[in-house]
Length: 624
Image (cartoon, rainbow, N blue to C red; front, side, top):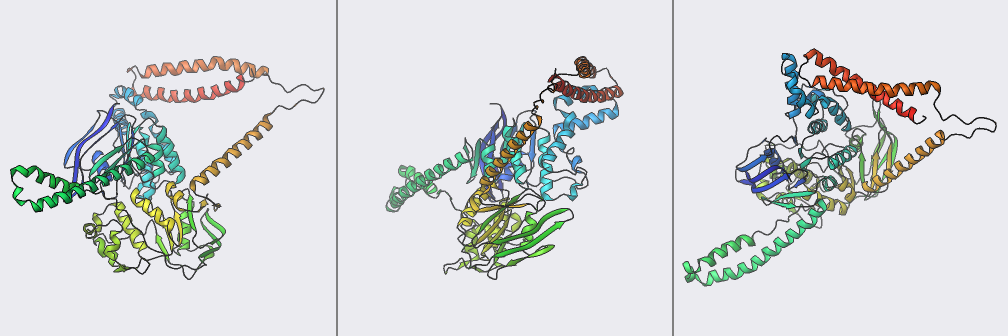
């Protein structure tokens, strides 16, 4: 395979913190690789290094010459005063640079002919059309809207469209599914799955990872491990690696005890004769302490008592202008219920949650919440830390001690330890944490209040897969109520009992199952609908038997249609020939700028004419 990217002996550190050391891997033509690591261990940093956004301590990052690379950053930035469409023309990619050179050549009226072949090769003529198509798929329709007016999610989608438009040979993607609704995620999954491109990406969406990538690389303990398979294969082989490492560490510990006894009993032997034993002792000591850090986010926090009455939505209506969120909506939430809320962006999922939490008032109706309910609310906007505080101080400002149930009492520091915040991390300033570590800290502050009703609005964004696994297990055994709004299909499948599907315009369906079951049901319903429509079309187009004594309906061309058909058979080749002549003339290098523009416009007209007349010819040919 042709090598597109080679990373060789790469090391990166921040002061005393070493993220990764002497890591080596490559991306070849056609490879689609997922990168997995815990939050704070360097996933985004590694992608930024490869993308040329950050420097590194040592090693090499080498791309194949003239490789087209697209890079989606986790937090993309554009000038705030340009429009969405203009943003698609301000990227640093080969196609945009070529278009700029071509426009500059037009203004100078020289060198235009030299760029025509390059414009053809990179499909630069179709750039704006591709931009509009992909932005539409990502539900960005107002292309004249200023970048500064977009939400963070819309900005991420504009940036994603930007990297897809140029059809790069290598895509580097940092959390591409963040801020995509389920429909957009499934479109992107299909697009990347069938596209003939190479991919290196970080994502927490495990279904996406499983279906797009055929290889997983993992950063663990500053080293890199490679698995030649999808996410399911990775899970199996990673566990085998951990078991083997732990067994090796256990054997080393047993040997270490014997060697330690020897070292204590034989001080006179510490000469050159026994130096190899002493060296081996220190090597064993390292191996014994290399026990795999299989630590996980331990969320053993019991829910406080919750009564039978949870909440009731009574005749709730809400709209913004013409957009209806709910209309005369009624629902009684049951004890210990675990509900997932899904739907496309803009259908009102977060608005519904905010009405339940009292942050937004409904236009009509109300929510009646039980007296024993204690909400734990994890919201998209709720993470508001003082970045200058230390982690331990932020938690202690809520409570010095936490009551996790069963008569236990934990200090704030002990509680943070359960969330993978080591003593060193606890005394870090919050601004030094990665995005995922801040999300984990936020989750910690929500759960430490001992709620009995968890309301989680997009909790999976920016959390690493290890944290997600343990959060899922916790929610499944949580002795209270749960509402989750999420676009993470895997997460929803593992956690919820049923779905509330927001289908837009106040159309809300209660589905008794998880997301995969809902998709299967939806596909079955769509298949039935298509079959019914096909049968209806068949009935409408089926020729009726003429009554006795009448002639059958005609199945042949009329005289006028025959003449039209014959004319089209002569006209279409003539138009094709004209188009071919114009294309040859434009490639000759002898035309002026005005002539080039005129012939280019005529080619566009000819393409439309040829398509239109060919379609008519096909219609008539069925009767000929």
